[in-house]
Amino acid sequence: MAAVAVTPAPLQLQPLIDEIVGSSGADGAIASFIGTVRNHNQGRTVSFLEYEAYEPLAVRALQRILDEAGRAWGDTRLGVHHRTGRLELGEASIIIVAVSPHRAHAFAACRYTIERVKQIVPIWKHEHFEGGDIWIEGATADPDDEAARENAHRIACA
Amino acid sequence: MRVTVRLFARLRDLAGSGELVREVATPATVETVWRSLVADMPALGDYERTMSVAVNADYSKMSSKVDDGDEVAFLPPVSGG
Image 1 (cartoon, rainbow over the protein chains, first blue to last red):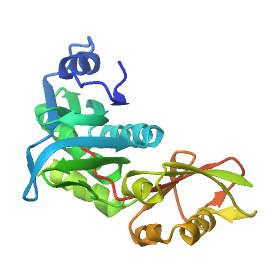
Image 2 (image 1 turned 90 degrees about the vertical axis):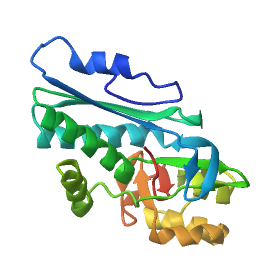
Image 3 (image 1 turned 120 degrees about the vertical axis):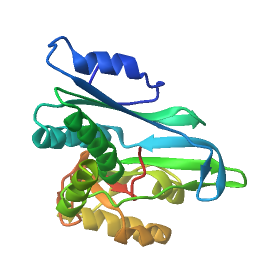
Image 4 (image 1 turned 90 degrees about the horizontal axis):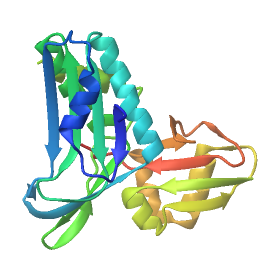
């Protein structure tokens, strides 16, 4: 199992944890995040989501985020998998695992990763709701935008 | 020369296709490819202010050079997670 993946297959947390933890025995903390499909968004009743990705660039962008986190929290290892295709309510769209000797670094790296995913990874939500559908558009992706990166870091350490 | 254009999310819907092969004059930049696309499909034009661009699956700039056979992608604001 790769630390980074963009896949139409259902996401499974425990295998990713096992992969990132490995067998060193030097870690004291595992932080994980599961993003799920919720039933409402901006006043709309959501039926389901479709996620579209530019897969080769999405994989590169995820790897870049892990490299950034590795520089910020050098003792921490990360894995992140993002789902694509149709997702029903409650299904996991993203899973993140951060493993570290210390909890503060694990929590921070995990939070940093999800904030950066929302900034620079070329993946899009197509929301299907009661009465229509809409492409959700968030951030203009610019991996070299230092202000955005610093903002993600600030949120991660808050 | 010939380039492959990739479009995603609402840009893909507006164009009616996620992948187009386009002829562009040499030398060309990402911007040259975009202008030729918008000339044929004016509805895409609004995205110029907010989109990102990529060449051969690497983030790039409008001013970047494009070579024969390259894949040029235009990306609306992202919404993963």
